[in-house]
Image 1 (tube, rainbow, N blue to C red):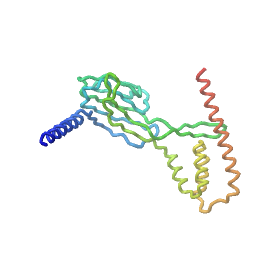
Image 2 (tube, rainbow, N blue to C red):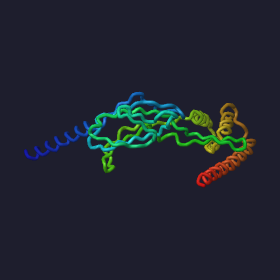
Image 3 (cartoon, one colour):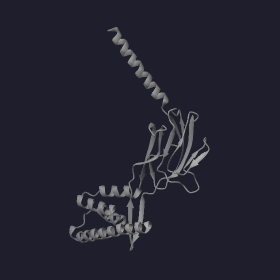
Image 4 (cartoon, rainbow, N blue to C red):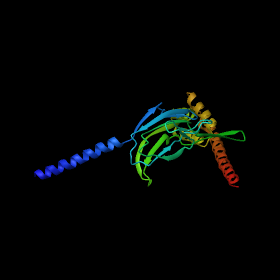
Length: 243
């Protein structure tokens, strides 16, 4: 019975040692100039990371960011290692002599809205607003096996126009008009959908359905035709680029 307890104590001690060892070996990261979690298109971001206690088993460190380079400014500036980089994703070797890494990250939030003109009609298309990160840092060995993933700082791109429109249609009780206006907005007819939403939310009395029906049908036809032309134009542009 005593030997069984000794074995249990032994395994418990080994477990605690492994736990302490893993905690000690974890890379420590400090940040100066904490970036915001929600930002605007084109907003300038500048902050500095200091990485300490890099594991000896690491042979490479990888940096990845969704920020866009600002003209005449480097995206990464490794101040204590005396080199810079303008690539969004890259890696470089480290060894036991690399005790700390100080990197200044300077860039812009990417543009996710795209505006195009077609015969006097303005189309505005939006890309996804989430899934971006200021930095993704990983440590690997010489075989490419992951040693450690350092904390990732995500951000969301805010489009005030989209948020304002969302608040507008939430005030509309009729589900048909709410879905219809959202569909127009998603097709890129931002001005037209906002004008209708303004009319529906600013008037106390709802308009009669009969006079809206022709406008709805016309809007759907315009949206469909513009959508076809929008895609066709992209196909033409792609074809020209490949020639």
